[in-house]
Amino acid sequence: MIKLLVTGAKGQLGSDLKDLANNIPDIKFTFIDLDELDIANSDKTNNYFTSNTFNYLINCAAYTAVDQAETDEENAFKVNALAVKNLITGIQASQTKLIHISTDYVFRGDHNSPYPEDFPTDPQSNYGKSKLAGEEEALRYSNSMIIRTSWLYSSYGHNFVKSILKKGQENEELKVVSDQLGSPTYSGHLAKAIMQIIKSDMKKDISFTPGIFHFTNMGVCSWYDFALKIKEYTNLPCRIQAVPTKHYPLPAKRPAYSVLSKEKIISTYKLNIPGWEEGLRDCLKRLNP
Ligand SMILES: NC(=O)c1ccc[n+]([C@@H]2O[C@H](COP(=O)([O-])OP(=O)(O)OC[C@H]3O[C@@H](n4cnc5c(N)ncnc54)[C@H](OP(=O)(O)O)[C@@H]3O)[C@@H](O)[C@H]2O)c1
Image 1 (tube, rainbow, N blue to C red):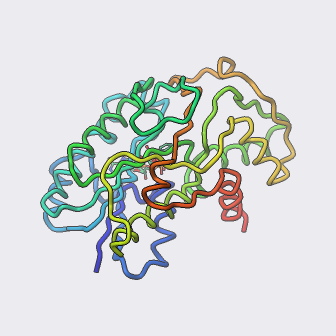
Image 2 (cartoon, rainbow, N blue to C red):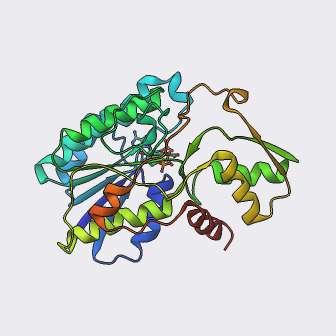
């Protein structure tokens, strides 16, 4: 039986993968999170892999508190970079295939057309720097596939969609930035794409291809457009006002343009990626079936 480990299993993506696992009987899934194993701890991680081996590892564990990372650089690097090194040390003897998740924040964010995978990186925040360092660790291992994604949200955890739904009930007006462009990604769709990639490899249909890939939902919008769509789909009673980023200062710099090109993952794995509006509808259905 094929064995697959998911780290960061209680996060957004990990939880959506767990939902899919129930319908995939030919894979034995193991889901772990910080309470079972701190992957930033080298000894514990090494010990774990001496008694547990896997065919695939999906690393969804991360330090994702983008603003907090500006004053907590050490822990961001521990979880986003050192932990990747620890995982690879643990899995290399069994040649486990690693799918590691990364981010659009590795780019400078001031380009004006979708970033291909080989576009020069230049992260502007500690979070982005720590994620890039994690990519560099992953690329040292020949069985690593890195999937960069952006604007991830889910029916699980804390995210923009859930925050707009909550604040839109509590306030008459919300101010949302309109000068940052990107592609929202429903983590349920990313989870499906990852499992399609693994199943294609298992069937020897399309083999696992190491290297960097980009995955988001299709289409481009601003956070303001995204908020308007949430309001439209849920009949939120509040008004939504567009504001520039400079009116909403945050500790970590956000990319103004973070659209990732999906051409490589689509052509390699024959994926059919839904648009961001469909992602939003699917997420809202899960929140309010
Ligand atoms: N969220 C976004 O907008 C976004 C955008 C682009 C890319 N990404 C990337 O997508 C991936 C999945 O993100 P997500 O939103 O699903 O993340 P998430 O919801 O924050 O989940 C991450 C999980 O990792 C766990 N974790 C943290 N430190 C750990 C450690 N030392 N050992 C083991 N587990 C640990 C967390 O536990 P605790 O909660 O207890 O800390 C949490 O359950 C990440 O690689 C992230 O960088 C996210």
